[in-house]
Structures are given as structure tokens and as C-alpha cells.
Length: 156
Ligand SMILES: [Zn+2]
Image (tube, rainbow, N blue to C red):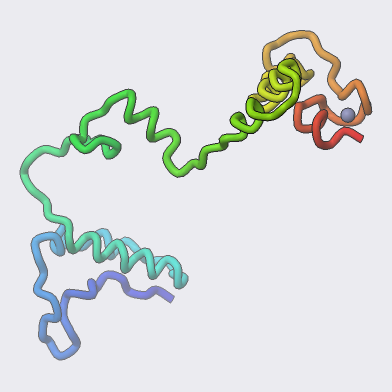
């Protein structure tokens, strides 16, 4: 069953009064985008439709040409620094390297753990990534691919 989305929520009440006087944003292409929604909509999609409707009501079109705005700087202009910072947006930092260098182990052990933490030891998986000759499986158990995680945590 079609929900008949062609009639916008602000177009008027059943008694003929207008609940929300349409702004110019409500008239974008005569609300043709809403008429295109014809499918059987689930609850989630109806929620999205209503959110979109609210956004469209706040949207005002102007005659000035569109321009790109970089959202990661206050000025809206792109910078490589802001792009680099944006790549870490939402990520959490891992400060395990501090534990490695502050422990009492000999320097060679600290260095090995530092390399292993960065996955930079020459395991078969790393050799394969660099296109170098390697044995495909772990030399200790001959069952799994040789990766740092396997060697340190999973190898029997
Ligand atoms: Zn193994």
C-alpha cells in the first residue's frame, strides 16, 4: 500500500486551515521529491522521510552559486593539516608505546615489542606484503599464516 507521500505535512489540515504556512523552501520543485516516494515504507524509512521533510522546510534556495565549504576548519577552507586531523576524527588513541618504553626489560626486548606493536616485524605476512619470498604458514605450528598476532597470542 502506498502511503501517499505526495501530500506534504504542512500543506494544510483536513478542515482547510493551514497548519504551517509554507515558506519558499516548501515549494522546492512543487514538492515533487515527496511525490517520488511511492514504496511501502517501514517505520525507519518514515522516520527518515519526516527528518528530510524538516530539513527541507529549513532550506532556502538563493540565486548565489553554490560553493564548497571544508567542514574541518573554522574558515571553511581546505588545509592539509585539517585533513590529516580529520582522518583521526572519532578514533581513540592507543598509548601502549609508553608502557613499552617504561618497563624494566632490556632494550632489545623493548625494541622488539615496539616493532611488534607497529606490526613491523618481518613475518611471512609482512614479507608477502612487500613482495618478498616467504613460507606461507607459521614455522612453529605449520597451521596458520604467520602474523604478529598469531605468533604472540595464538600460536600453540
Ligand atoms: Zn603458529
